[in-house]
Length: 71
Image (cartoon, rainbow, N blue to C red):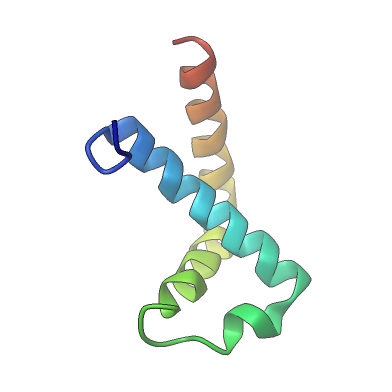
């Protein structure tokens, strides 16, 4: 089943995108910061969400991991 049709998989993909973009921006900020507009701006926005809402994102990752492990 595709991640677009399964809500839990879609949430997992979004969380992984946010965490990955935040991590890449911490290591190489020029890689993410040069694309602030357009389709690649999605990665910049994901990194911003990960930076500004990091306690909530980490809590969501813990909850997602628990639901996957207990499933």
